[in-house]
Image 1: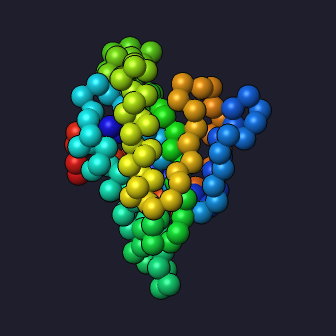
Image 2: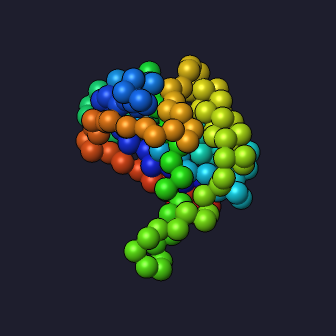
Image 3: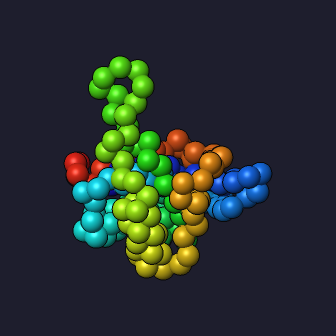
Length: 150
């Protein structure tokens, strides 16, 4: 799994000119799924996201997590995170899982985030044409790949 995690003061997803989900302070998580992803990847990534110490504490140091801050999480599926740009100028998405594999893993990931965060997680709609807006706070943007745990 690949995730782009952005600390935001606000974010929302619009589908067909209607707001699907919106959050204020929290994290916007774009997640891409590939066929080799499994429950271990989901558990590890969820725990990492919920506990990332990327929010300022009372002294202005990034030392608190979204959970400690009481922030929200908005998760948006994004198969393009697995784009291969090695050959030519048209990206290949061959590594991105097709819906029969990706949807159950995406749903399991959202459920795991909710369990780890201790409250509901907001989402986009898998496979929909979404308009995602955000106000990145900092800016703070972290990229995590469960196959390359740095």
